[in-house]
Amino acid sequence: MLEAFDLPFMQRALVAVLLLSVAGGLLGAWVVLRRLAFFSHAVGTATFPGLVVAAPWGIAAPLAALGSALLFTAGLTRLIRDPRLGPDGATGLLVVAALALGALLASDVYPAGTGVDQLLFGTLLGLDDADLWLAAAVAAGALVLTLALGRTWLATGFEPQTARTLGVSRARGDWALLAGLAVAVVAMLPAVGALLAATLLVVPAATVRLVARSVPQLLAGSVLLGATEGVVALWFAYELDLPPGPVLALLSGVIFGVVALGQAAAARRPVPVP
Amino acid sequence: MSEVLIEAVGLSTGYAPGEPALRGVTFAANAGQIVAVLGPNGGGKTTLMRALLGELPPFEGRVDVHGEIAYVPQTEQARLDFPVSALDVALMGAYRRTPWWKRLGRAEHDRALQALDRVGLRERAKDRFGTLSGGQRQRVLIARALVQDAPILLLDEPFSGVDRASEATILGLLGQLRAQGHALLICTHDIEQGRGFDRVLGVHGEQTFFGPGAALDAAALERTYGSEIVTLGEGAAIAVQCHHHDHEHDQHG
Image (cartoon, rainbow over all chains, first blue to last red; front, side):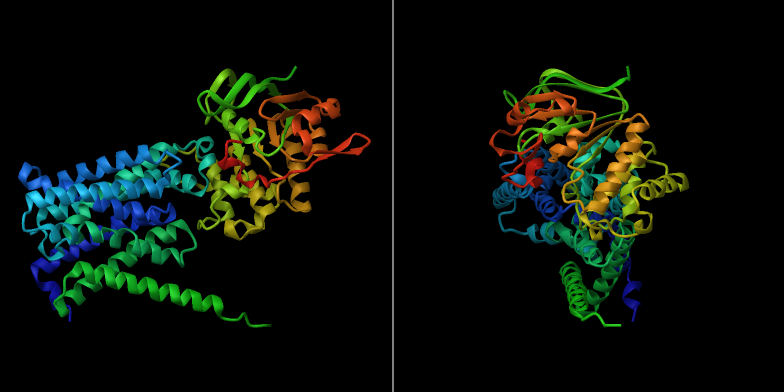
């Protein structure tokens, strides 16, 4: 049954999924707690123009994507302060701009549209050593960031007005979280692409959030669930001859739905009278 | 004379340069003193707190703070859906003194539990913050400030939406902190309660009064509350609030 994982390309995919689950679970927990799901999706999409120009400009794709994502993040941290826009308004405005720019560039750089699918959806079964090293670095980085800034993110997310008097820097914490997310999304691009990066970052953590009773439970649970979903999705994709990224997205969504429905059913169950 | 811990001189501050939301504030809070901040909704109480915390710049005048500040916000500012227990919240008071690479250890946990004990919530330490009543949540936020052990405490409407038992617990605790030499600034809507503290600071876009509660006369109340004030006789008065204060944080208080 598990002979699928005897194949070298499947082993690479397995290692990538496990490493990305660490980054996705740890950062995803904060994404869900800090309500940054839209940003996580948007920053992946914002790498689009960078990826389109990478090859013609002779820049390594991850670097071009990172530049694009960090530019988007920097722009957002400035726009977000405008109360007339709000965080979602600012994110929406910038992501539309990034998509439009990417599409315009793509119509010139990729006349027939080839490669764009790969940029947006990734190829989990075609990863090279550099992709795996990047995934490992991002997993380690997410762990260090969580250890170093977990208290800052917790205090700021729980109640931002007091953060300063508690000795934590809201601005530094927010910037580190957004930049960390941008880097993590770039590391996820080869595997799942820009559009599905949110699958690894948001869905497992959102699922565990429904049942977690503490932040450490949420962090550990998100990593474990993300890894499990990744391995199962890989196996399904191999056996059914389907692209693994969309299978992972679908599976994660179904598991979220099942847990949410289970919770709703449990909440409706009448409390027994003693 | 006791030491001045927090002081404002000719302070003018606000949210947009050139448009002060609060003007001409001059007051001092000494060690071992409670200063009540009275004023109508949108009168500038929260704006003053934010200026004292350094979140808003002085357009004119200055703020002098001699020591660390612990801030107790209104409980509505906290995210009730966060998976944190009362103990987790109280432990946040130990963040400043614990370097990021060190775990919060036994000593910090003991201090947080003691603080919860002082506010009468040790038994609820493991309960989720969001499941506690409004009064209990307020007491947890005060426990967090106790763990900080800062010489200056700013409390924004600590009695708002609080049951009688919690109010009595909080008042007793504030008295203890005063006796221990802390300086406390408390925003309140309760004029009679404010009069009972050491000093009263009235604000309504500008400073309307500063002095002992006994000197807070009808003219000062009229300046502070305008038409929202109702005199009950024998010096007692209540402020009739036309709007709920919950959203003051989000507005140009």
